[in-house]
Length: 285
Image 1 (cartoon, rainbow, N blue to C red):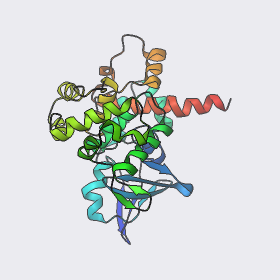
Image 2 (image 1 turned 90 degrees about the vertical axis):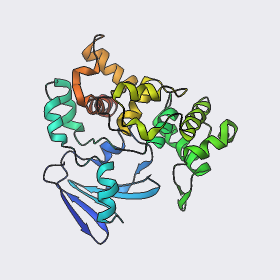
Image 3 (image 1 turned 120 degrees about the horizontal axis):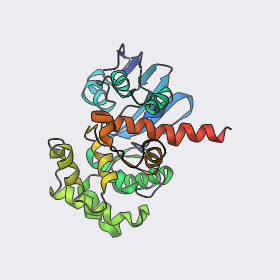
Image 4 (image 1 turned 90 degrees about the horizontal axis):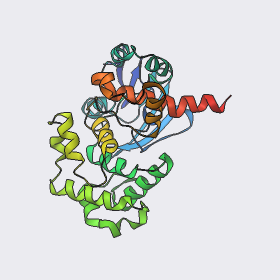
């Protein structure tokens, strides 16, 4: 787990101190989830597992507001992957000079363990799309078919409700060509043709094959779902940013086996560094 991290329950808040290798901004803005927003003062607000969550980070102290110790242990400790020793993983990956460079600025990323249906649907929506528009479509989907949690905040709708809406029913969210893929995924999940609960019991190749039975789910989307919802850390999603890194530094013969069992974590360091840090450095020249 996070080395030296202390968990304090105080006034129905959870305070995590000495949070090495855990940065909220990097974790929420590295492209793995779409329902958390950064607010002023180090706050992040978002929705997961049907409830709104407010967090704040000050240096290496992170506070989860209105969260009991029992809820934290049952839900959020696993969600934030706090039982995994990322310092050890970084050490294992440090044989690669690009990971060492990226980790100097990205070592606060942790792989979230998200709801499997929400992750599947979200990454179908993400295809050929930018992050602001992905967030807008997902927000519209939740407002259209989700349950209201509090004013202006909605849960992610279950597959059954999305399937019942059909392609025409999704017209208000303006998802374009993705609507037919969203509905196909919802129908397969709702009917049990694709049993998401059984995915984690499969090996990585079999789990990937099962997900790609869904229309519109190719290697990249499947790998995102396997990594961000099921904890298949060997999954290595390749989007345009990661492909640039591979072409520039690793060559045509590269396979994710190079990074071994933690290839997906390496991918996140490389993705965030290429998309955010290098872009920022170039813009500031």
